[in-house]
Structures are given as C-alpha cells and as structure tokens.
Amino acid sequence: MVIYINGLPLIVFELKNPNNEQATVYDAYTQIQNYTYDISQLFNYNAFTVISDNVETKHGMPFADYDFFASWKSIDGRNVDNNRANTMRTLIEGLFPKDRLLNYIRNFIVFLEEGSKITKIGAKYHQFFGVNFAVNEAIRATRPDGDRKIGVMYHTTGSGKSLSMLFFAGILSRHPEMENPSIVIQVDRNDLDEQLHDTFVQGKSYIGHVHHAENTEQLRTLLRGEAGQIIFSTIEKFRKKEGETRHPVLSERRNIVVIADEAHRTQAGFAGGFAAQLRYALPNASYIGFTGTPVDFVDNNTEEIFGHIIHRYDMAQAVEDKATLPIYYESRLIPLDLSAGDIDEKYKKIIEEAGGDDEESETYKRKWAALEKVVGTPKRLRRLAKDIVSHFNQVANPFQKAMIVCMSRRIAVDLYNYLREIPECPPVEVIMTGDVSKDPKEWREVQPGSKYA
Image (cartoon, rainbow, N blue to C red; front, top):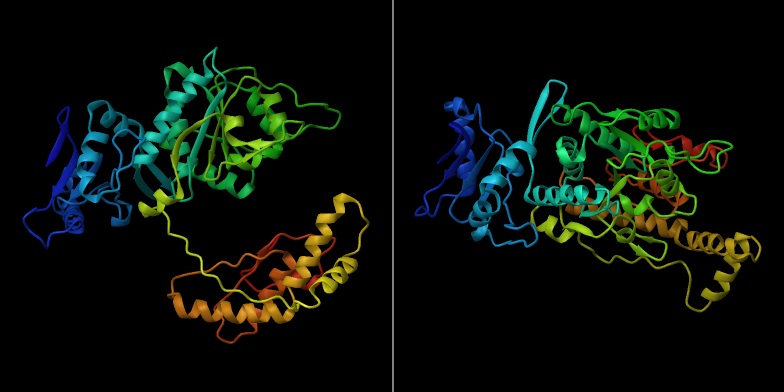
C-alpha cells in the first residue's frame, strides 16, 4: 500500500498475509529491502515505511537495519499501549492524522552526515510527542508574560536525547513566534559537549551552522552577538572573571532558550554558583532541562528549577521498547576481613590511622578512608578479581563487554593489577582521573589502551 501526498509516494506499507501463520513482520522488512533494489525509484521520495504481519506493526527508514524499526505506541503522547496487537491502530491514529503526518515529515526526519556517510533517521513516538509538547511549552514560557520555565524532559538513557534536542532546537529556530531565537546547549562535561556538538554538526542540513564556545571569552562574544545562533558550552564557562562580583549581562533578549543536558547535575546552587552566573548573564532566557534522573532535594529540585515534567519516558518503557537493555541484579557478597568479635575495635583503629582532627568537615573523609581500607584489602580484592573473571567467562559472548565501578581510584588500580594476574582474564583497561601532585608514579604506567587523565 502506498500513501500519496500531493502526488508523491511518501509512505510505503508492506502488509503480510494475515491468513499465513508463517508470515512475520521481519518478512515484511525483508520484502521492503528487496524493493529498494528491484524498484528503487519507489523510494526516491519516500519519507518512511511501515511493515506489519497483522499482529505487530513497525515503522522505519527503508534502508535502515531491522533493529531501527520500532512500534508507535501512543495515540495522544500521554498514554502508552504496549500491546503488540494494537500497534497498527496506535500508528494510524497516533501518526496519520493529516497535521501530525505533515509535522513528522517536515520536522522529525533528519539526515546525519558523517564524512561521506549519510544516515537518515526518523523520530520514535516518544521523541515526536515529547518534542512537540516541549515546543508548545517553550512558546508559552518565552512570551512577555511567560515564567521562563519551559519544563523537564524526563527521558532516560537510550531514549535518543541528542536527537530530541536536535529536533527541539530545529523546530524552535523556524517557529515564527520565537522570532529568530538563540539557543544555548549547556552541558557539564567536555565529552558530552563534544558528543552533542558532533550530533548537531552532522545534522547541519536540518539545523544549520552551530557555534562551539572554546573558552569563556568566546562564549561571551557569541552571546553578545546577533540573534538566531545555536551555541554549545560547558557550564563552567559561565564563570566570573577576576574582579567581577557577578557575571555581567550578555543579552536581555527573551527569545533565548537554554537547553540543560543532565539538568539534575548542574542547575542547583543559585547562591553564586555557575547556575546563578548563567542566569545573571542571560536574565530573560527560558530554561528546559533534559535528564533521565530528575532529583528532589532541599537545595536541588529539578522541577522547581525548570518547571513541571513535560514528557516522561522512563527506563521501564525504554526496556519494553528495546531501546535499552534491562538491568539485572545478582547478589554476590564477599565478606570484609573483619570478624564480628573485634570489628568495633578494628574500626576505631582504622579511624585513628586515617588521621585528622575532630572538625565536622573532616568526619566524612575519615569515615570514607576507613571504609576504603576495609573494602580494599588485598585478600578481598584478589577474591573479587577471580569471581569477576570466572563469572564473565561463563556468561559473556565474545562480543560483550563489562564495566567495573570502584569506590576509589586506589581500589581501581589494585583491582586492575589483580585482574591482570589471572591467566584467563580477558583484555582489561583502567580509566580514571589523575592528580599529578598526589598520585604515585606507578599509577601512570598503565597498559596500552588504558587511560589516566
């Protein structure tokens, strides 16, 4: 079945025979792939394709791998239907009303260019609804009587937040009510800054030119500049210079939107922190937070800072959609090298060895140092190393990896060394931050591929 819009064949449905019990949705996918070779002209104008076996229905790009085809699971964007047998109905009623379909084709398909490779990507249902809701909230918040709080996009790991931000920024940039806005994408780490920036650069055909603030001075110059820019920066670049009591105002325009990635980590501390300096610099900007883990603390409440939850796509739904892998917990306890009879005495001794005075600010450090010594004894770490290697070799296939998170850098180094002593241990690397003024020389003598920074 082919859907024509203004005479153009924009959507192709491949529907398998419902009377054939052997027919599957994957068979429909295979047939679409064969069409791309046999009747390639059909896809010159194609927006996306739909495949169905009359039980399960999925949509995706005709040249994409099967894993990138997904079910459309919502009609209104608020309620999710996980029943596979309803996926044709939710797709038709959720995406194919005329205004929604034209919106999807215009705003939710992007071509990412990476060198000579071009990848066509279309939004999933949670991205489509979430971004549309966010655009409406942005228009509300940025009006003269708006509260400057756009809200929170509660989208978990694996939800495609980078693309959601790209769609959000692109729609806002073209929206007439926004009057050529400037959009600031703010992150808290350099690696996230580069990752997000690379996604936007690859989507230049959709979003246009983007700026990357390399330092504080360049950031200030960009924000003082003309409207309509998309600017990437890490939060610490909104710092005061020597002699400044607070950050100077860079722009008083109200059509500036700040997108805060991992918003729960960076936007607290209005008593002079980076978040406060950002707001001094852009006093009339509106803020939207993207996070998979909104928090509710006395001095850091994500909803109080940004506004209400605009759209929710949590880990449980991401696992249900196979957007991310499920997490399982298996208790594997290794006793501490302390007997019940003398644990109090030994703990006191460890506290004394940790040193320090009785000031409250030192209490946590002493307790942490004490716990680190108990947890990181050679006997315990050797046993832990053997257990990890044995378990990994039993359950992992040759293409799988594992990650070990340790409570301290010293334990990470020691465990790394004990793992390498085990003959059957697979290739292992250690990645950690460094302190050249305190770390011993041997910590820097890591194996090729490992990283000490």
